[in-house]
Amino acid sequence: MPHRPFSIVFSPPFTFFLIIAFVSLASGIGCTPANDVEPASMVIYNGKVVTVDDTMPEANGIVINGDRIDLVGSNTEVEAYIGPETKVIDLQGNLAIPGFIEGHGHFMGIGSNALNLDLLDATSWQGVADMVATAVSEAQPGQLIEGRGWHQEKMGDLDESNTVRGFPTHDVISEVSRENPVILRHASGHATFGNAYAMELASVDRNTMQPEGGEIILNNTGEPIGVFVERASGVINRARRNMESRMTDDDRSARTWHEMELASQEVISKGITSFQDAGSGWSTIEMFKRGVDEDALQVRLWVMVRGENLDAETLKARRLIGYGNHMLTVRAIKLAIDGALGPRGAWLLEPYSDEPASSGHNTGDLVEIEATANLAIENGYQLCVHAIGDRGNREVLDIYERTFKAHPEKAPGARFRIEHAQHIHPDDVPRFGELGVIPAMQAVHCTSDAPWVTPRLGVERAGNGAYVWQDLMRSGAVITNGTDAPVERVDPIASFYSSVTRKPTTGEAFYPEQAMSRTEALRSYTLNNAFAAYEDHVKGSITVGKLADITILDQDIMTIPSEQIKDAKVLYTIIGGRVLYQR
Image (cartoon, rainbow, N blue to C red; front, top):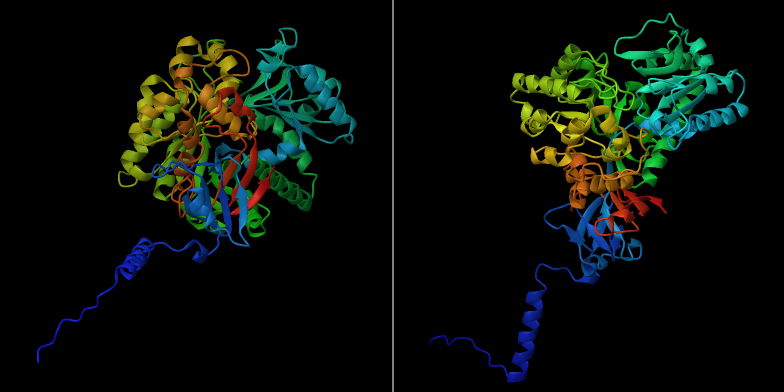
C-alpha cells in the first residue's frame, strides 16, 4: 500500500497566530532579550560620545565590563545592560571622549611644583621677590627656597636699569633672602635663577668657567647676575645638591614618593588618563613600579628613560611594556639637542633677530645622539630628542635619516619622535612625513610664546616655520599634543583651545591658517598620542575591546563657541573602568 504524504490543515485563525509566532522567533535570532543580558559593571548613557573611531564617530552611551569597553551605541542599547550592581553615569547631555593622553610632560616636576613657589602667573620681578620674602618668613635660616615659572618677557617692571640682555639681576631677591639660598627655574626649564646665597653655596663668582652648551650671564663688570642659561643651570644646581646632601635617604625617598602622589592626583583631576613622561632615571622608574603595585600611581605612564650612559644589556633588561595591566611602559629614550626660545637657547640656522650675536645653544653631542639612535633602533626603543630651533630640528632629522638607512628593516615602524618641533625650516617640514618622524608638539606653547616668537625669529621665520601644524599634517606626519607641564599648567583643555584658535591671552591669533580643526585637535590629544607610544591598539579611542579610559566634560568642546572652550570643566576621569575623579 503506497504511503500518503503527511499533511495538516489549519483553520485560518490558527494560521494567523502561527505566522506571528514564526516572525517573532525570526526577529529574535542573533539578539539576546534585554532581560537576559549579563549586567555590566558600568554604563554611561544619555549624552554625546565622541569616539575618535571612524567606524562609529558618535554614540550616546558606553557599556564597560571590568577595565574594557564592551559596547558603544544608543541609549536603548546600553540601558539594557544596567543591573542592580551596575555603576550608572547619566551624562545628562554632557560630552564623553577618550581619556586625554598627555603627550609630553615632566611627571615628577608637577609634584615638585606643588611643594614649591608657583611663578607662572608672576607679572613683575618685584612680585617674585615678594613671594620669596613670604617663603623666607616661613622657613628656617639656611633652608632652600625653590620655585618655577618666571619668564622675563612677562615682567612689566624690568628695564635696562635692572636687567642684562633682558634677564633680571639677583639684587632685589638677594636683599630679601640673605639667610636662605633661592633657586628659581625659568618657565621653560632652560634657565635657572640663583640668589647671592645660592651662588655662594655653588662657588660661583666672576672667575667661574663658562660651561659648554650654556652661559652664566654676566654684567658689564664681569659679575654673575644670577641667571644661568641651558647647561649652565648645572652650575647653580650645585647649591641644591649641597642642600640635598644633608637629607637622609629616608627623607629623600619620602619626599619623592609624595611628589609622585601629588602629580598623579593633579593630572587625573585634569581628565588625563595616560601621561607620557619626558625623561626619568632608572631609580624614578623603579619608584613608579612600586607606585603601580601599591595603587598609589593611578594614572597610566609611558616613560622616556634619560639617555645618558645606556647600553644594550640594560635596555633589554629594563624594558617594560604594559606593566601592571597597562599602567607603566618604558620603551623610549630621551635626549636633547638644544634649548628653548624664551632664554634664546633654541639652536637656529641663523642668528636671533633680537640678539644677532647668538644662534642659540647646541646642548647635546651630535655623535652621542647618533650612537644612541642606533642603540635605540637595534633594541626596540623609540628615540625622542628635544629640538626647538630650526637648526636643532634639521640636525635631528639628519641623524634619524642616517639611522633609518642603516636599519632599513626596522625603519618603517621605528616611530622616532622630535619633542617640541616648534620652529622648522620650510625645507625640512616634508621630511617629517617622508621619514615617519613624529612631531611631539604642545599647542599651548604656541599661544604662550606668541608675544616673543616674532621678536626672536623675525616675521619671515615666524610665519613660515613656527608651529606649522597644518603643513606638518599635509606632509603625512602624525602630530601629538600636550602641555610640557610644569612648563605650562597640565591642562588639556587649555591646549585644545590653543590648538583650534592659536589665540594668546592678548593680541590676535598667531598665524591662524595653521590652526587645527576640533576633530584634529581631539585626535592629537588622544589617538595620535597613543600611536606615538605604540599604544593605539589599547587606548586613544572609545572602541570595543580597548581600555575603558574616558573623560567626561561639562561642555561640548566640539561645537560650543571657541571662546567658551577654555571654560569647560572635567566632570569625571575614568581609568580602566574606575572613577578616579569626580567633580
